[in-house]
Structure formats: structure tokens, C-alpha cells
Length: 69
Image (cartoon, rainbow, N blue to C red; front, side):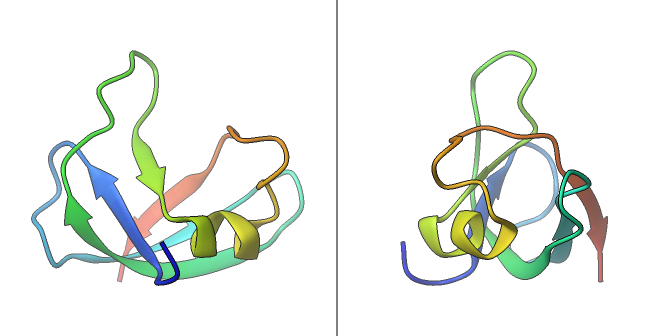
């Protein structure tokens, strides 16, 4: 919850990624440590720490750009 971690359906566990919130330009780096999300139309679930860095805690859901690093 307080670390930069996220869930992804297909990328290997341990993969380092950079997420960018195109709405505000904020970015954060994290490590995939779980599987999911299992909600149609969603590609990642991020920890609270990452959502805070990306600036969408209050909104809860947003579009993000993802790249492996």
C-alpha cells in the first residue's frame, strides 16, 4: 500500500514499469507484484502510494500510459 507496486494481468512479476498520467503529466515508477485487475477495461491496479504520486487518489480511476523500464 505504501510502496510503488501494481498488479498487471500479463507482464511478468518483478517487471519494473513507469506510469504516466497524461491528464497532469505526473509519473511514477513501480514493480509488478500481483495479478489483476479483473475488471473489464482496466489494465493495472496501483498501490495507494502510486495513485498519490500520479495525482488521482480522489478520482480513483484514470487513464495511464505504461512502459517497461
